[in-house]
Image (cartoon, rainbow, N blue to C red; front, side):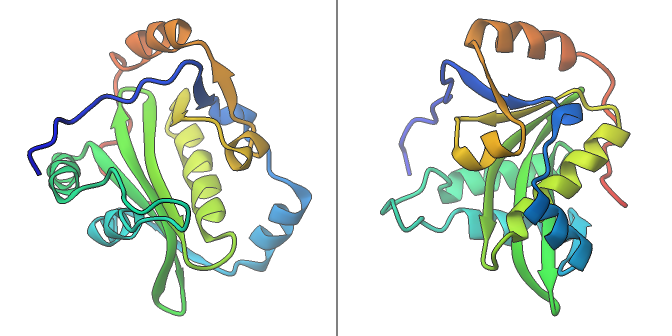
Length: 177
């Protein structure tokens, strides 16, 4: 509380062009098993709460109560969205982010069951393609996101690209299957 909210702007920026999604053979096998029920915006608060839990490699998280409240406000406005993976009625993975124009800015993901967040991410990307989104901001490079087809983009190019895409008409504001 009371800490300034900073804009994280890495150079290079990790992005995924939705049409460039790569699904590995093993992940395709997991998808075929249909281990998870998937939904949009059904449990936004629970997803952001799970994402705010400190990771095993860090003692704290950037997703403070203040940040959670800000994202919850954006969710109420139809700007922030969540994707959930369920197993036996329990939330086992998911992600959330902000949709502006034709860009989805991924903020955080979590999983409690192997591959749950990956399946949620793939589901989100496939739906974003159908809705005409052209860019997913993944922010910083990770092996996991690189394996899914994300690529590094120089910050100057990223800023130019989102400048044009964010001004385009969003589709849709209510995320449903």
